[in-house]
Length: 334
Image (cartoon, rainbow, N blue to C red; front, side, top):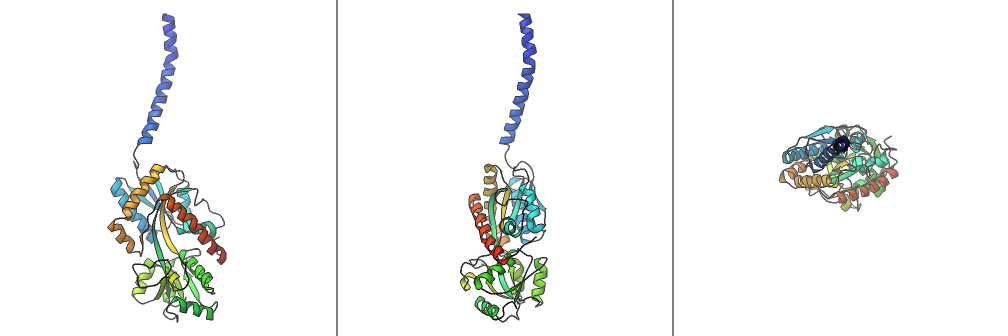
């Protein structure tokens, strides 16, 4: 009996240690699963330089997230390759909700066709959280151009094929593709002149070296108000509340014309639905506040929050739309 009891002790001691380890391991997994999100700082990657509209919007959202959740939200600017570097960083990050991206029309709709090869899949490598805002571009002319509306500009371009040029901040930017779509829909020949950034493009427009530009609303407004350029239309389907008297290109004869610079929040693909839902609910709440509406209004934008599945469908439609424009124009970034 004693011998049997000893044997039992010898046999059960390792088993007890294993069982205890399994129990502790199970407890730690359970604890991790039930730890409320977020429990530590969040990294908010911005794939463009600091100071631009996308960066400013990301910082505003990050401040409000930090305030409401009690966790730091650290904005990390990772510019380069049209936004591809920062987007790729998030695509390959752990899908735990602690690394998120402020993506844009370039990173998730344009670059997939503009670049011969992307380091990430804009659909499968991300979990869409919500669309944040859509900023219209404004078609502005140098005052020397003898056109005061879209109809007159089209007539002028047809009378002088290949003689009008338009600037953009870069090949494949929303401003560039707005120009290419305009050329296709209006049946005109204009020459695209890409610059290394929107600022030098606007400088040359003001100097009269280029005829026109499809400029971002936040960039265009000061020059419009100072009468340094002539604004003739906005590129979105709806008029801008900042320039309500300015017609859209669509209502000016090119029905369906719609180009905007949109921003949206993404998590890495495979992020838990509960985390996606929590991020969506809080960012949508932030976008509905008067303070955030005012901040976006300074950029000529309005909140455009939606549900993750709606955002996913929007992205797929945008990829198809811009693929047609890019292929028709022959534009390539590499």
